[in-house]
Image (cartoon, rainbow, N blue to C red; front, side):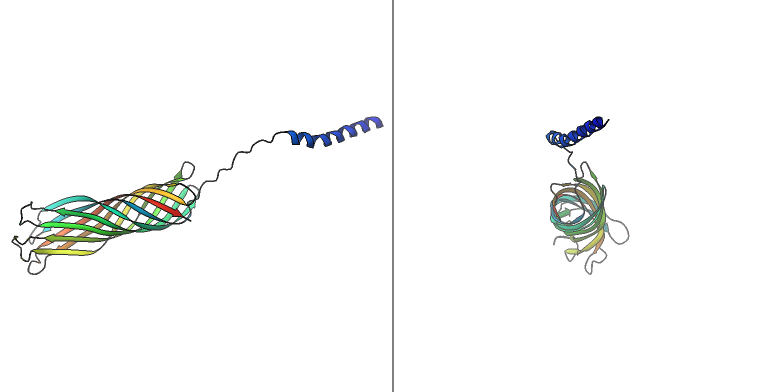
Length: 242
């Protein structure tokens, strides 16, 4: 019996000594890499450029009733900068953003035809600023974001109605209004995170800057023109995120 116990102890001791050696010679299994989804949270700045379709809806408002109406849209260039901040919860991203841009958009209408003594109505969008909330969801591996946005819009709009010297109106220039218009903006887009810090974006926005009534100077104050200004914007942007 003692010999049997001694043999068992010797065998166990041998296995204990051999096991580390055998384990050291066995190939290690490769562990799967841990994939960490990119984070959209944080502050960012950026620059954008694109096209703006500025629309002018014109209505003549003579004393005693309605007058002619006209509508026109022209494309211009819009570009500027923006700043914002994002918060993230799982796949959902929320944020706020402010931007300001310069614009070359200009619309000219000749509602009474092209005769030399007919009026010319013009609307220009000089600049546009928006203050918006954003909400979106990440897709794929988390480095692409689809979002919707909306908020307040401010625009520097110039609306004017001009009669040439040959017109029956005197003085020739009937009215002009240049002011900061307040309205709203809504839209959406898609962003893609190239690296931890660099993001590219494509977005579309609809802007409504309300209406303005231009009144002619004395003695032609009964000649009034209503201008309604809206814009459609398609632009791309590059962002740097901290």
